[in-house]
Length: 227
Ligand SMILES: [Mg+2]
Image 1 (cartoon, helix red, strand yellow):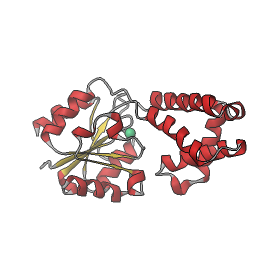
Image 2 (cartoon, helix red, strand yellow):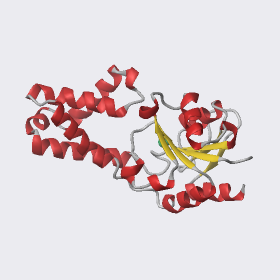
Image 3 (tube, protein in one colour):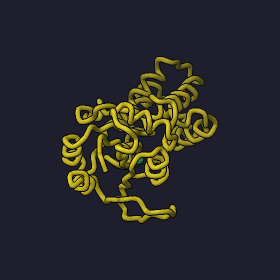
């Protein structure tokens, strides 16, 4: 294949997301405890998570925009105690700063540098991580998120927008990610090549021809260098 650009998923492809969200929830609680303690009394962490689940379920139209959904949660949590938009934004910032304090999988830093030497990289995420804050922006030509674009993977339109940012045609672009539907089937449906990062060695269960898969990003970088 002719490889002109690589698009990369972020959460669970470059870093594990579960511990990040755990710490972000705790950072939010700590901020609230310090600045709006009544809110923590009324909504301890389990209740805050139930509020989040309800708000996310009530707003399917914002399914691509976790920032907007989080802000709705915070406004609902804060308003009964007399707090307004200023506190909601500050609370979000406490959450968001922690959401961007990620720990890369061990091989990722080196693998990304190798990949960036081979082709322009564009991040393509349904989450709301910010590569500038994460500290990886210098390795990427561009970033696109479901929030910035207005639709989420597997919508083909967001893959095509990423190709446009990369300056590549879909059939000369390789997308890599951990999610079988959002990343692999999404990329293939949009006419890109797809690589599945299967860290757990789960194997492909969605039928059809199994995608090319690797258990880590270093293996993927070896493959890209062999093209
Ligand atoms: Mg992912």
